[in-house]
Length: 393
Ligand SMILES: Nc1ncnc2c1ncn2[C@@H]1O[C@H](COP(=O)(O)OP(=O)(O)OP(=O)(O)O)[C@@H](O)[C@H]1O
Ligand SMILES: NCC(=O)N[C@@H]1O[C@H](COP(=O)([O-])[O-])[C@@H](O)[C@H]1O
Ligand SMILES: [Mg+2]
Image (cartoon, rainbow, N blue to C red; front, side, top):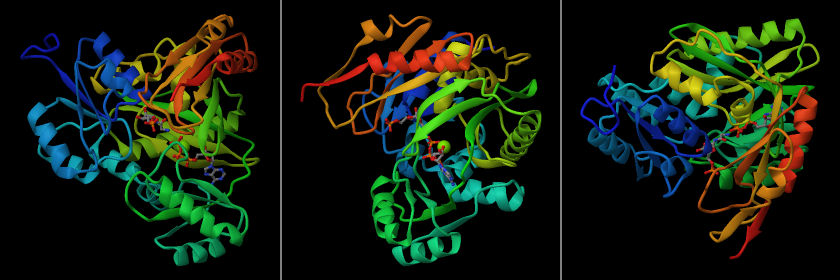
C-alpha cells in the first residue's frame, strides 16, 4: 500500500540512466501510481521528459551519487545503464537502500569481466573463449591466445560502443584505439572473445517475481557493429535449444538474484547454445514486447520490483521492431517521415526525444505486428525506412 505521488507516503522510484528504456519503465511505474525520479549524465534525457523530477549528475562519481540518493531517499533504486558507481550502490544497499535487482547484480554486470567470470568460471555456463588485456602489448598476447577472428570490446560499454572484430593480428592496433575511444568509463581494460559463428542470436527475457521465474517467448535479433537493428518475437527454436536457453537463463538469473526482468543474450550455434551476456534490466531488443505481449518488458520489470504477482505473460501476436539511427552529430535536427511510417499497417512508432544526435545513436523505433514474425519484420523495416533524420545544423 502506498500513497499518491508527491505525498508523504508515496513510493519513490529513482532511475539511474534515463534513456529510451527508462522512459518506458517510468511510464509503467506511473500507471501504478509511483513517484518517479530520472537521473542521467545529460539534461532532457528521454525518461526525464516523463518523470516527476530529474537530476543531471555524473553517475560514475561515488560522492555525487550518494549525495543525491541521501537527499531523495528513494524506496527503489533502478539502474538503467551499466556505467554507474556500483560499489557505492553495494554500500548503500548494506545501509538499507533497495537496489534493483540487487546491488551485486548491477556491480557484476557493470563490466564484462564480472559477469563473464561468474557465468563461465563459477557457474560453468558455455561461453566463447575469452581473455582480458590492459594495454596494447597485453592485447597482442591475448589475441594470439584466442586466435583470429576475435571480438574486442571495452569492459565497460554497451550498444556496441568501442567494439570491433579483429580479423588478423594486423588489426590489433586499430581495435585497441577504437576500444579506447568507445568505452563508457576511463578504463583501458578490454575483453577479447573468440568469434562465434552462430546461426542466430536471441534475447530470452526472464522475469523473477513473487510468482517465481517466468520466461517470455524468445526474441531473435540482428546486430550491426555490435548494436541492434531489428528484433522479432517469437524466434523459432528447437525443443532442445529452448531447454538449453532456459537452463542458462535460470542459472544466471538465480545467481544474480533479486526481482525484476533480465535480458539473457544467447548465441544459437549449430550444436550448442552459448551464454553471451545479461542485462539486469529491460533489454533494447525487448522493445518489441510493447507490441507483442499483454505486459511489455517494462510493465513486467515494474510489477516484479514492486513485489506484485505475475501469474501469466501472454504473447498476443508475432511482432518485430526496427530502429532508426542518426548518422551524424547535431543539436538541431528533426525526426521526419512519421506520416509515411504510420501508414504501414499494424505499426506504431516510438520517438525517444533525445536532445542531440551522434553517429549511430538510436533515435526511434518502429514496432509492427503480423500473422508471422517474418511479415512483422518486413512491416517494421518498411516503417523504419520511411522515417528520416533531418539535420538543420
Ligand atoms: N564473441 C562473439 N562472437 C560473435 N559475435 C559477437 C561476439 N560478441 C559479440 N558479438 C556480436 O556483437 C553484438 C554485441 O555484443 P555485446 O552484446 O557483447 O555488446 P554490447 O555493447 O553489450 O551490446 P548491447 O548493449 O546492445 O547488449 C552481439 O549481439 C553479437 O551480434
Ligand atoms: N544496449 C543498451 C541500451 O540500449 N540502453 C539504452 O540506451 C540508452 C543510452 O542511449 P544513448 O547512448 O543514445 O544515450 C540507455 O539509457 C538505455 O535506455
Ligand atoms: Mg549485448
